[in-house]
Image (tube, rainbow, N blue to C red; front, side, top):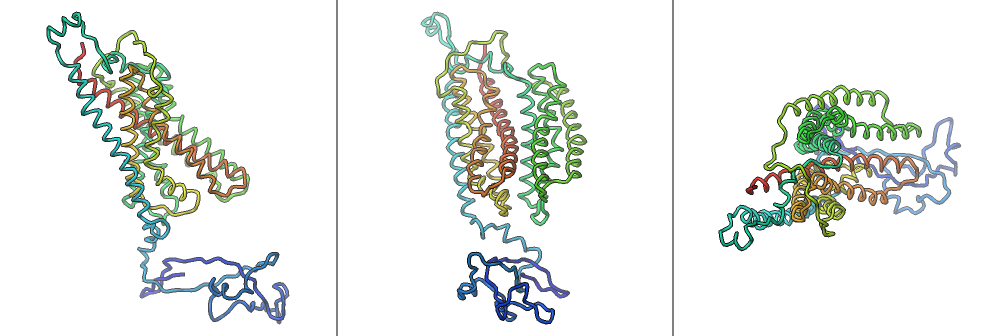
Length: 475
């Protein structure tokens, strides 16, 4: 045990534990139960009053090793050692992470992610600077008389401009569910951004156990107005009629699913008599936060969203949908959705390993500065890969982009869940409840990440379409 001496006493600033097994021996070949003289317990001969037992001493004395089938007597020695570490600096060994994981590994993760971002940025810049500029200049150019005569007085449109009358058409499949997902995704995104930012600047201390989870829950319920606002305004843009159901689903769908899974896992822990089971008072507090703060804020945000004007698009959609030609395999929805999550996952999988280790291997994780950088890189990667694939989709005359952009970047969560399943092989699990806890909690995290990354992809696709279609002249 390390202590820092002060003028009025001392303070414990750290401790180190060295566990090992030895075969204790008592005088006159007595065992533990009969090792008493005059009613007093006799100390083992292997325990010294002059020095503490350490592993080096055990290695030098072969007879101290425990043999197979021997009874183990539990003893301990305490060594007090003065330390120059002050009370305020006692957590620095965990904050630096150099004792367990060098900073070089985290910087390697950042550099790896930045290389992916640079490559994607180059692709987006090439599309915007070359292809789009060429397309826009061609679409906006006024044909000469000779060109009109050669083409029979008709100017045939090609490329992504062909779908300008359909690109902002509301989705034909489940528009309400998309609005609910977007609203919930905005709520999760703002919560994650603020939580990581607060942790990075030091507002969340490792000395206060569970503070990170408390901050996450409080920020989530307080961000309910963002969910209601974006869901209501998008649903109004789609000219939906069942707005009560849309707002109700926004307030209850994802929270109800998460609470149901958490409650079921908590009952499983309670059935095993585990001390990790959450008491009923804490569950009631969660319900109070949900119904008392989150739900009213969702309806308040929905009220403000419906009062706002719908999203304005640069072009209007026609009454008759344009037929969509058969697409090549590389721009088909299954392929783009599966491929869309690979690069965002590659940008964050190294840091994901450390996060899973802190959750399931009892390792400290407090390098939230790296986490904040990886989070920003993840969002940028999702946005850029979505815009690249959206451009190819529009060039194939497929205007069904609403769900496609959400699912393209949202598929990152699928790879995260598959990676967590691979990581599970590192854990020693011998009980069914272990499988339920691991995959249950990681399932909630993956669905939250699906909403977050999908929302980033949706907003990037919306911005991309508004930008390019507002730059052309439409007859």
